[in-house]
Length: 192
Image 1 (cartoon, rainbow, N blue to C red):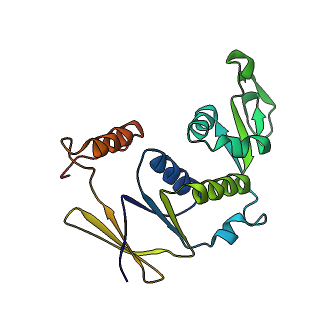
Image 2 (cartoon, one colour):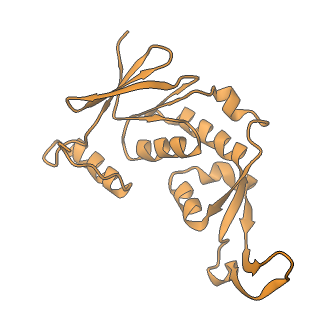
């Protein structure tokens, strides 16, 4: 069986791993993601009853990545935050901090159920040609040699990923990838 070749491999297809995969794909990278859970388990309405509070900057990032339109109708705005201190047996402190969305003209953030975030991410990666998703598989080994990372999956397949970004004097196509990685906050140096 031939190894699957990609630029980046991510072990873990939770909210962070899948969001990173979308961001890297938008930057022009080919991405492979493995996760021990199946896509059906991840998308199950009963899987995760938790809620995520997404800060203003996180919502901006999701907008830039094109994910927010999949989530917006399920999101509830955070318009006010009141911070107060109290001790058991005593009432609240007379001092507090109040953050009001009217000061910035937008909600301070949003609350979204994790299941909706996960479902939106699964739909987005299914539509993104640069992402290959391997649900129901986990990364079992990692070996780095000669500028490549080799990851063995629990189903016997192997993924080979570039370990380094291309050199600065590489072709324009690679220069765009280097610039995209830099904008995304990915810090890597050729040969490092």
